[in-house]
Image 1 (tube, rainbow, N blue to C red):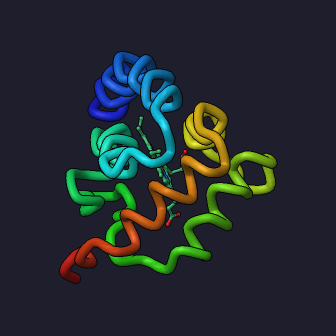
Image 2: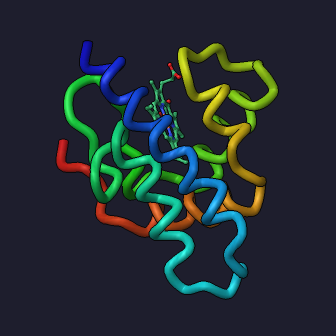
Length: 107
Ligand code: HEC
């Protein structure tokens, strides 16, 4: 039930992903704005609750590898395989760099 709600919210935000893409790469807020499109599911500041994985403070390469595997289909997913396709490689690098630099979730 919670997941359906999150998915609906994500779809409402999908237009933001398109709008963010139109912005120049030099926009200092771009990484933060892109990260906001992940917050519905992965928590604000990349710290999630419950079963959802946190992204904050994690290894950049590991996260990018997970995203690449969702994109290629190597890693089965319920939704991330679709979500990654809504972003360019550069946007994903930016957003992951942003999350990696945030304070990690407390254990
Ligand atoms: C609609 C909810 C939703 C949104 C929005 C979302 N994710 Fe996810 N994410 C998931 C779910 C659910 C999983 C677990 C894999 C699956 O079933 O799709 C996941 C898994 C991941 C993982 C793997 C984590 C791990 O340790 O295994 C990464 C990395 C990730 N998401 C990054 C992102 C990024 C970056 C964004 C924003 C660009 C984002 N996600 C937006 C729901 C979401």
